Length: 295
Image 1: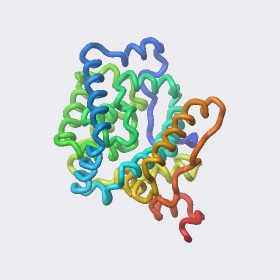
Image 2: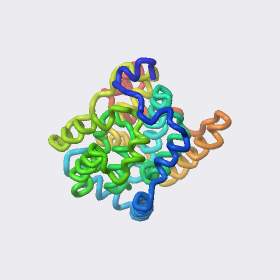
Image 3: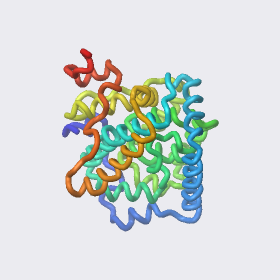
Image 4: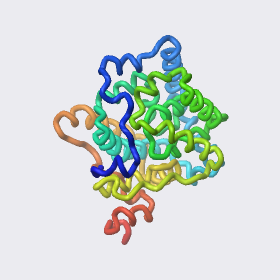
């Protein structure tokens, strides 16, 4: 990110920054009710993963609501999620944390302890309603359109989102302590009070454009732009040539890259997203000289 990133995004420091690490850990452990919720959500997540048809059902619902134009195969979706995590969300979030002074490993460990399922689903389509809501409330989004669209795939999801946001705003959310202790931007929850009603009033609202100059990496800018909404994610996935073997290989590479690769500075697999699977208009915006535009 450029040094001006915080000004571009209007970020403010999180209120918890500078507190004792032990206090921050205690914030996310929670009590009986919170941990019961976590266990139930893990069970729901595992059940969904054992029934992959749930992904197609949710995608078909989103397509019927006008949120996407295609329904890629599960293999295509999973490979796209690898690219989204590796070349958009992961890279983007690392730079954002660095700009905010947030420790990467420690904070992500706290996020996992606070609500494990928010970090278990590579694409959000296996997630239950409450896991998606927790994710939206827990971590900064420039515009939560992607996840609010996912909530549209759950009956009553948006109404429950509004209800829990009201609880959080009044200080009475069941996970209030952990949510207050995790959100990476001090003004994010306040902005959600505008963004959520805006989306409910107009569910087909477009995601906000990625601000110019947010990153010096053209490929990262392209990835953020392509994956900023479900339509972009599914369109990208539908253009990939991917089968089950590709998924196994891709996630083996991810495991290596995030463990031994991180230690030794090695990386297996692709080094950037598949530019040819991106929207041509976005490629033209961020990589105007790319060969895919003339092929």
